[in-house]
Length: 452
Image 1: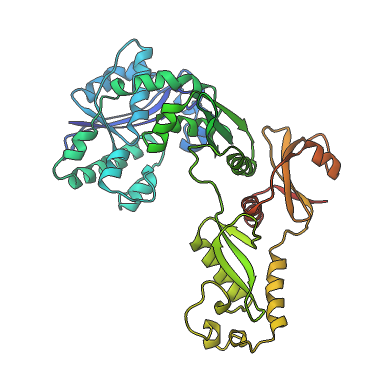
Image 2: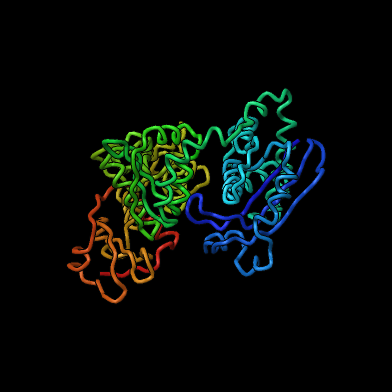
């Protein structure tokens, strides 16, 4: 017998959260035999980001029962059951936490549909509940509410049971979490408690150096996942961690800039990805004097027009440039093996594949494209949100080069280069930071640009 569970909470410090909503379906592999759904009045305030996610606020729970009033019903409906949940460690931990506050040691075996899905349906893009069930054609409604998520988890579990014909995988993943996880939580709980739920960068140390750096929109969530996950990288971190520090940035842009700069400076051994943008497009002259566009792995010391996260993105962009500027595909690294260009077959090519188009005219078209890739204006600051309501963050670009970032108080003006540089943290201009800034400008993610 199984008890399919989903829980919503107040959010907050690790192990200080409280349950706000719970849904449990008792399930015998073929049908629901019992169910329990209830809002729960917590003894603490719901975090604002949780209100935004679930829509549950404190006013909605004023007349709801407190946990001690529904505790007996939860024990009854889950008796002789294996708890099943999507990210079972979280839901089971919350139940044990609430029962511990009542002086009752709540113990059940558990099964996580995230782990089961990864075993039975490998290589999916995402195993988050919403994306996973939609990719499998399972309907889901009332997302981030206990009843809707529990029903979707039940339908997912039904499918997984069917896929695990011999039940070998399913049985191997059933765990008594309270035996396996207590030591890990007691070791890391103080580390998780000190981290806020803000945007920033965190640094994990062993006893001698930084071993891992990561930027995140939510420091607490990311650190909690890092210290409780069973991924191969997370396990390595859990075994080696001695302490953690973090920097709040307010702005995700500054978090990105800090992450890439400090990974390159510190070379942490558990940061496998050294470059954010590892593929570049470089301008080269061929033997006839025509400028060509070449996609390649970025090399130290070489100059690139633009950098990309992968080769597919670079090829897509290069094809856009070929179309927009009427360039020849044969004068790029994505050319085909024929002498005549693709454009020539559509009577668009000017003949430069065979050196019929004037060399200067063709190279001038390429130069026009290069000019359009430059920042306009060439010297400016990009303004974004700060770490609190009283400040803003900025990034300085001077003569097309990214110089650094910093913060300023809203009560003061910093439009002079001298004041900006005095407050600025310097960073290296490279293809990574250039691509980050360019993408932020293109997608209008910043708050303001001030020309200097």
